[in-house]
Amino acid sequence: MGRYDYDFFVLGAGSGGVRASRIAAAYGAKTAVVEERYLGGTCVNVGCIPKKLLVYASEFRDHFEDAAGFGWTVGERTVDWKRLIGNKDKEINRLNGIYRNLLEGAGAAIIEGTAHLVDDHTIDVDGQRYTAAYILVATGSWPTFPQTPGIEYALTSNEAFYLDALPKRVIIVGGGYIAVEFATIFHGLGSAVTELYWGELFLRGFDTDVRQVLADEMRKRGVNLRFQADVSRIEKTPHGIKATLNDKSELEADIIMYATGRLPNSKKLGLDAAGVETDEIGAVCVDAYSRTNIPHIYAVGDVTNRLNLTPMAIAEGHAVAETLFNNNPTRPDHMNVATAVFSHPNIGTVGLTEEEARQEYDAIDIYKSSFRALKHTLSGRDEKTFMKIIVDPESDRVIGCHMTGPEAGEIIQGLAVAIKCNATKAQFDATIGIHPTSAEEFVTMRQKAA
Ligand code: NDP
Image 1 (cartoon, helix red, strand yellow):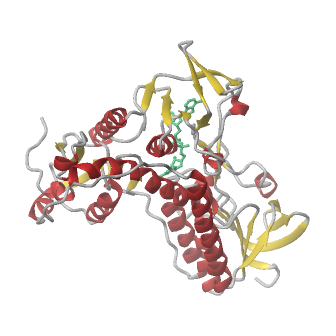
Image 2 (image 1 turned 135 degrees about the horizontal axis):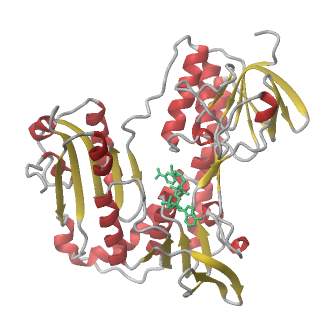
Image 3 (image 1 turned 90 degrees about the horizontal axis):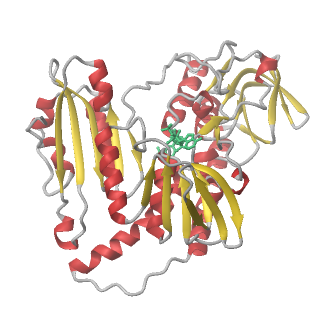
């Protein structure tokens, strides 16, 4: 590989790019990673990590409310938004430093700047050219807006993490992970929140029961959820913004945040110059090994628009480094990937939804449970925890587990291992529960749902 400056050149120091760079460098590949914005990418800077910190902040509302039934008297409650954001920023800075150390410690060079491909072996970073034997595109994705008049007044989650003050009134547009999570974050912190979703029920693609239970729970808490509602115009007013909806009704708020999806960050990368194929939304087309149509150019993470989740990007990045620099061809497994929506309450899910299972199997068995968690016998909170198991009766294999309720993300992670191991319903039933927990319900459901 002596004829190139680098063995491996990675575009983007997010979750996938950092993992690939680190592992490749550790295997002895001469590696560089170029980043134009921040080390750690979306997840660390304006995604999973700061989002989860804000989720924790917003959960205190419930804790304070629930405390009275347990004998506590909680005094006046206020949120110091600036302190919260300041502390969050400190943690993000610390993580940026850790990412830098991880890369440098592994021997990868970090290049700051904006990169594009000049040809299939040459990368330009702000006028400086580098050549590489292998190139990895790991540039992530970026929020996208519809063409609604006045859309320039809208924010995305990127800006929501850096607001100067906690908005009193918030409109959120969208019905995916980000919209739902931010609706419950702002509501938990004390904002009056309206979430608008243009379809019949948000979180399309998740199991219908868990979506419905979450909608019910969010409404009980006071989130103004409006389905089949969309914004036709946004205007600035002296007091904030005004949104006119498709039914001509008007809503006023301090901010309007759009979470209407993200698009692959591929447009300015010079992929054409290198001959790399992309699809109609700009996602880089790859095979099971994350290889593009150009055999020495790979792509991982959101820019490939497969399963746009940080742990998946990490797995894909790691697999590329294994394949290229450890003589160990590795295909990341995109099946049965567990995921959570960190709403209040959480959704946690792994495997097939009921709708998917009905498509794939001639017959399925469904087990459902809906109950009030022990904690709320004293807190008095009117909250239902919901769990659902989907079984293939022929093999007895559990093919889907879904939950809406506190800590669903934590609970489903363990079940994801069971599903990965092809666990059967009989094995779930033979597992002794931990009492008293909510999670034990997953091993005590015996009655098939009608
Ligand atoms: P999603 O693609 O998940 O959701 C976009 C939402 O906006 C959908 O409800 C969609 O409706 C709706 N929408 C799309 N276009 C419009 C429009 N023009 N007007 C009104 N509504 C519209 O995107 P997100 O931005 O929520 O999240 C991006 C990705 O980030 C996710 O796919 C996920 O993989 C990842 N993520 C994961 C998290 C986690 O693991 N906890 C957290 C946050 C993000 P429709 O139903 O019609 O598609």
